Image (cartoon, rainbow, N blue to C red):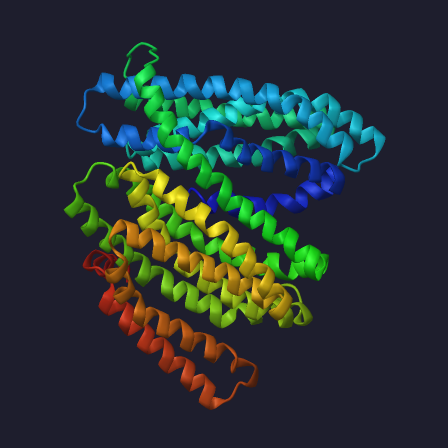
Length: 466
């Protein structure tokens, strides 16, 4: 819910923004929001490191956890200030040399850039505060604060634009103020659950441990988004700008299915940090079983109906070019959802270097395969390259976590259901009584299998709801 509520609100507010402040100003604001998200890279993985170290110190003293928190907090504050000083001249150069806007709007941007610089340490600190609360498994409070904070973050500039001014010199401070409120709320929860009145203390030894862990997390944080950004550039340079749209729209739709595995592994991460190896494997298998029975029907429905949805949402011509690409990408995100479990396992065990090395290993083969696929199969080649990369990622991570053979057996039957669903989807254009019966039988068998494989706790909850 912490991820879904902001997503829903953004769908509502985007048309309002464009109508109120215009497309050009909204483009600037969208870049600012994007930068605030990517500014998290400046924390050098300390948010994830804080979550792991605090979770692993569950049986330690309250003072030990407070010292970890203050060390991470002060480190991130220093990194935020240094990052802000670095971003300041770069922002002026970027908006001056690469961004095409009217001169009047350019002056607004120049006046607003100092606010963007101040936003960087605030954005970085939120990563540490979030990680600390994850480490203490305070997920309800964390998601409540984050969801409300994101709503304010999206609505505050809208209110300012409507009642005060659409000038970026007013809009960006409102963005900063909204993010500052969230940081204050997160900090208050940390003082309640972690700091507990212990004084500010910087521990050099703990700082080195945090930076060593966080450095490898940063490699992963950079390499993953970089592959996604660069594949768009390669598609555009190979097939043209129009092809980027035909690929990006189904990619973003398929990417939304990652909300559930992402939420589950966020909860699993602190648990993995404290359990022994036997409990670790049991927990991972339970998580995989839950993901299989929850994600496989969702992906099957998406594969079955992505083309009718694209026809309704965008148009028939677009759907003809993008539907099959979207189906292959859905397979990729289905596999990627399961890869998140060994990913969390390895990082929680204090082995983020293994994860980072896997991702570095994948980069060059992926771009070679992407280039070959684009030149021989067009956009379908790009989708196959992505799906093959995440499949290799799953194999590598699960093998290193020691769970590949078990997971392979668990995923065999779900994979058959998805392949059958893809076959059925290509028969829907010619609807007849036989096809309708085929779909009904398919879903009845699918639901029977899901019920058979579902954990008893989920079955009990469904029976109670019914």
